[in-house]
Length: 135
Image (cartoon, rainbow, N blue to C red; front, side, top):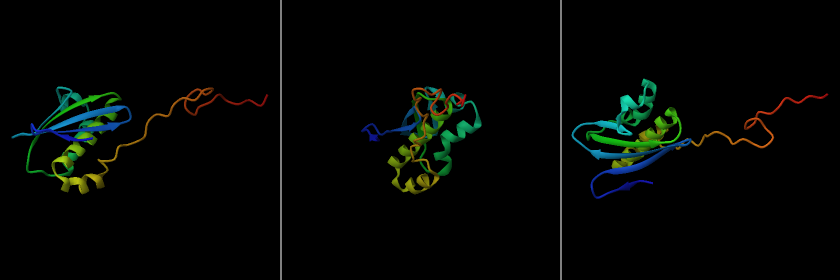
């Protein structure tokens, strides 16, 4: 789940639907967030998605600053934002376990299990079917 290397960084994984985000937190003199080698403002086009991805930092206040590098694959842009939030939350707990209560009560540690239901044979979609006709 989470690994701490000798080089001083914390690496965790966050997931949502089919999106997978690997976050790496490195203590640094100033804060910076890179998502797939792009600035977080360039990667997530809307304020809502940016806020969603960076909510763990807004929820807590840390005296230490971090350089965050995230590799995210799969899913859509909204699922990726929630996966990034999940990964950052897990990494912050690895850094300081006392943050767990605040992040858990906000719901950032739960891996949202909702995903698209599979299509069943004989149906048009997962549950949609052709209209039944009596005659």
